[in-house]
Image (cartoon, rainbow, N blue to C red; front, side, top):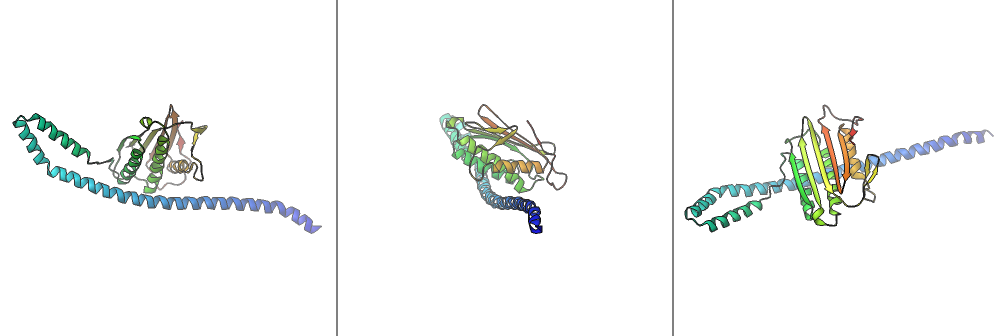
Length: 264
């Protein structure tokens, strides 16, 4: 009898313990996934920075070479003008313009990491026949870890590229990028064309992708914005999806914050 009463008493405790253990394992599993995801981001970041540094060096060498020949170009243009050979003058100007266009300086915001990410993603977008307009004016250094910038910008642009590439008519594919510093805050804006419907629950958008990584990029962005007490707004209208993020400069090392806001 005593054994039966003890078993009856312990059964709920065992169930509660099993449930708590399951929650703990789930939490540890999520932490493990995030850990490996951050290591992958760091490796990708290092590769992107190395590639971008090499591309910058090649562009600067081309520019130095062009500057070295500038005096000779002016002399040729002056000679054609004095001889009244306007046709040759025009042809020479056309050749100079074509030569300059071949020197792709890319996007230059002054921030090396952001330039690397932007230029790498822009090349991917162009390979998918997506028109890109970008403006980025930032200081050489920002008070955020490189990993945070990589997570936010990388996922923003990856989502924009994937959505724009799904538009059937290449003429309708576009991405607009606007990054600026404003009064101790950094502002990120990315808009892109899309096709179909976007799933929205209240003010929260859900990723349209399936698979095991469903919505993971959006979740990573949301987490980073929340960590820094930032502002986040997503909106869609007439085939255009836009995301705005405003991150205030941290006064101290950030921790998980409940001060983040979603702008509707």
